[in-house]
Amino acid sequence: MTNIRWKDDVSYAMIPFKLLTWPIGVWPLQVYNIYSLLRCIFATCCVSLMVILPSIELYTNCNNAEQNVDSLMLLCCGILGILKTVWFRIHAKNLTNNYNSALNDYLMIKNAKHRAIMRKHASTGRILCCFLMCFSYFSCLLYTIIPFLGNANNKINVTSEAMLQYTVPSRCALEYFNAPTSMHTILCLIEAISLTLTSTTNHGNDSLFFNITLHICGQVEVLKAKFIDFDVTRPQVYERFLTLIKRHSYLIRLARELADTISFILLISAFLSQLTLYSFVGDYLKSQMEEVGLCVYQNIWYDFPTKLTRNLIFVIMRSESPVTLRAGHFIVVNLSTYMSILKASITYLSVLRVMVET
Image (cartoon, rainbow, N blue to C red; front, side, top):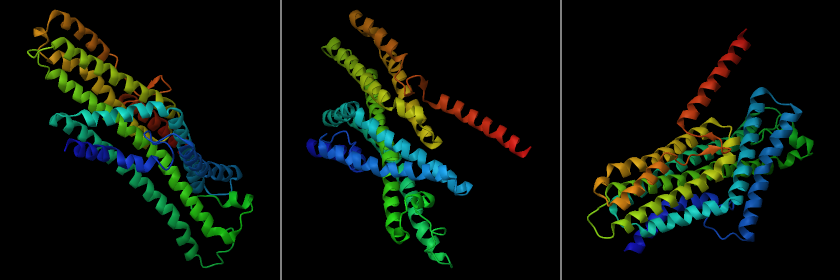
């Protein structure tokens, strides 16, 4: 019965993210062999089309302003997707350690209350994943359909290169490479695949990171509950409390590995929607780490043995310097910094608007 429940919990918490990231070669629990490397290389090469084609479009400047904005957006998405995929492969050990720890957490959990906490955080991770991927794939579907509808509605000869539409703005780039117009449908489908992989490498990797970060937050919440409910009347008080202290140190180490993994990506992240989610998750992780010291203080620490009471000070002191997500190891990513970025962006936009109107 326990084994069945463990499989159900693991499937619920991890299967969606495995389906997203295994095809691009970054699933942490995969076997890192030549086949996973080939999947990663193939995905990276496909996504590189979303960097090459929009770059040529912007360089030739043969489109209108709307298409140039789309090209710039796709260029940024492609760069972020490639960097996330490569970076998660480079730091695969950090992600593997965290996901292996998550497997052990589901295997060892026995308390129904603690299991409910873990399921709640797993559910939040799935909701974030569903929101990101549904929105992303729906946008990809629209980009794929629009060229065929637009070309079908044209009353003039659609074989004219000047009137052909593609999945992404790439007409000038394909003309530069002398791509035949007879392959228009095939080229659109290739671009659609590349666009879908770009969404997967971008938002799929985000979902993978959010899921394991939320799991760590759930483990910290479980640890806080254990500190609050710590029973000093049971035997082996010192050994049991020392186990909780070691667990606290272990979770701090795992959180730091995650923070180190995402640090560089956060430094170059340019999309406000992604920064919003990273800020919320980062702020939640920071608050969970800070509250460990408060939960220790809320226990009946005055009844603890003297030798054990001295250790409480160190736990509280470690909670005063919580692990945080940082961009480039120096910019804290939480709601406070997010609001500062948002205020600065609105200020700049207001200034630009006044300059344009005058």
